[in-house]
Image (cartoon, rainbow, N blue to C red; front, side, top):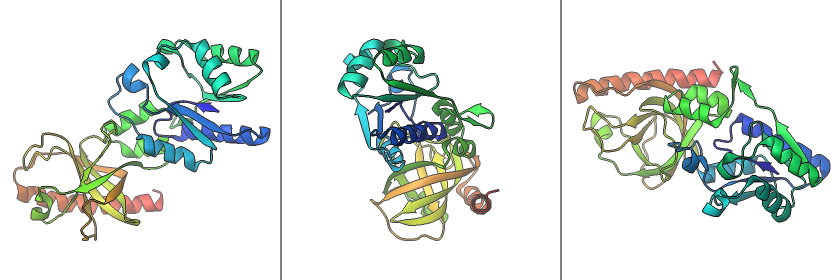
Amino acid sequence: MALGAFDGVHIGHQFVVNQLIARGRRLSLSTVIYTFRRNPKLTTQGIEGLLSTNSERVEAISRMGVDAIVLEDFSGRFQNMIPEDFVKEVLLQRLNAQLVVVGQGFRFGRERSGNTEMMAEILRDAGCKFIVVPPVLVDGTMCSSSTIREAIAAGDVERAARFLGRPYLIEGVIVTGNRIGKRLGFPTANIEVPDPIKLLPGNGVYAVRAVINGDRVDGVCNIGVRPTIATASRRTVEVHLLGFDRQVYGHLIVVEFVARVRDEVCFSSPAVLARQIRRDIAAAVILLQRNDLGA
């Protein structure tokens, strides 16, 4: 089994999972991912958002071909479990681990007091194999969820994609908005992101691709508070889908962020905003075409 939070299932996580699957097949063992229903860092380190919802994380890991995923509740009892008890009671007794795989720097147990050296010793005494997978470097930087969260928060979705191995995405339900985009000549799909822990890219305009009812559609996404019209009380997510005019209220939409077009700006009037949106669309089309060519 492989242990970790696996937030984002980035290429470093993928390397760990692939190592697990390869070793499991070689030893004829079932492959299991052991993770948490909610990332402990939300409690222990106060991070403001996660790269993947629980369903996104489970789906991404499942697609890689593991046999099972164990989702542990990060309960008070679990938080106070000393490292030795975690290994002996959970990994060995409850889950019958024969081989354990973790990433470099893995910590566990009460107040993160357990490290890979401690786990290696306990597992070795129990006759269990233990593997520490080295980090994956991207652009000379160690691939980590925290690095990707920083890039997403800053709106650098292209950098984030290099670490994730795919575009960053959000999914939600299309809801009725105030139709401001339609009055400006650019109708938008207003997206309600159901999970509040999902990290949204920084405020701005993005070239995106959306999947809705099985169709992939190019688009332009705005995230922010709409300062030109009337500052919203909370951040909104709106997507103008290019060449798409069907009514899809209540439908699920997945939005992949390809590139950032510009920052959010307060314009002097709706007319000036409308002219800028035309430029944004033209810029987004070019960015999406470049992405198709692998530029």
